[in-house]
Image (tube, rainbow over all chains, first blue to last red; front, side):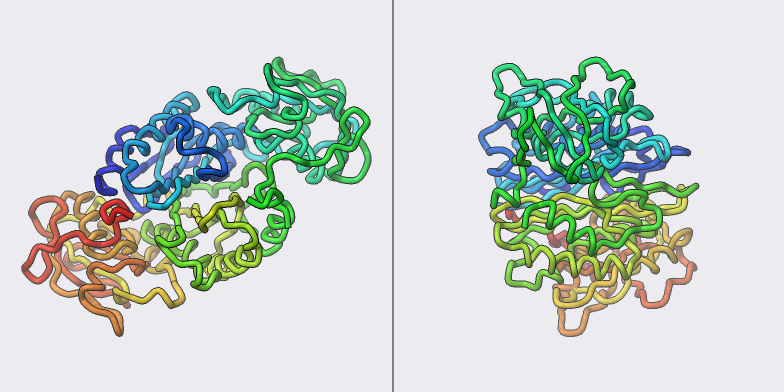
Length: 278
Length: 278
């Protein structure tokens, strides 16, 4: 198949969003903003032999490629609107492309995300980059820079989960935290690194008492693993936490970004492609 | 340097846009739409050994990576607002990363495009994907599906240009065509393939009489080369063409997508990574 034929087949698989005036097939997609909304934009790469292996299921890779961006939208309290998917694959992998998009569209439908465009290319290894655009009421987005000393630190679900599971980005939880959480972000690179980042942004320190560990996982993996797609957030003392979330510690005074776990300094050891040296 | 340090240095190089409420550093960037604007979104990949070689200048590669998306915004008549840049590079190429962003930011500043976020990763070969978001007055975007039989076909500048040049996406020309052109797109994969696509979208055929050839280039390269970043558009008979553009033919009846050049059928032989087999 040539590019036009592949794009046409993906176009037929794609979900068209209510606010997407023009989808796949022109130089750009057109999105018509609703009155009083701010737009959230994020992009995340998935690279063969870094984030996944070719022998893993293509539909799971496609689902995960979109989940990463949706989790970022959830972390800001937004609703997803559309995505653009850039994908480069080796020759003779046309069937893989359609499996990838089948998995991606499964999650797109569950979350009302339109596939509005993207770019197809060739490369020696599989590479993809997904941009997600979401919306939030003007000025209401949750950010990671508002945590204050004395706030409780919370996380949704359990951490250290395995790769082989269906991902549910915490979109409803994120929206429910608007106007309540002082800071919020998603746990995608490991709790120790992500909490460090939240504390750097908010210029505070953190003391962790406990961490909810996924069945079959370990405390070390819950602290330093990645790909959890849970939300990490802070609430002022006295504000009730949503169901399905656990308090894991307290924002404290101290050097911006330092994190303590059960009395010991916790190194930020989560997923950093540049520290690990690729 | 670790990822936080690299991102912080890129953040200091970045231009912050007037409508970008929150730039690099959180889960998402926040864009506040103006009243009455539609948003245009597009993404384009640049892959080592497909679109460029590692021994080419990093700043030119960065500039070109952004130019591709800006040219798509120009083709719809839009003004660029922001971009997200996803980049994956091998280890020990930190200096290359900053050269890449220096070139990209040079074009971003000239075109008032904010660098609002993105994603950094590691890979064996250099890979990048740039998403550009632009804006256009509601309902006024130029599309490629409105060409009608009898319209004149026009192109800006000259085609078949070499890689080694400063790129100027035709943003002012695109805006000047709003309300005049019946169809518009950019020439990025070669005139023969791109005009074929415009004709497929508009369900018409085209007859080309001539093509403006860049100095030192050839008719073949002007018809079938790529990376021109000029605008291809159609005007109803009697509508004056903007300066710096040339009439090259006429929209005709015939099989949708068929293109004739000086009386002979022209094959769509421009840049298609899937037809060429990568």
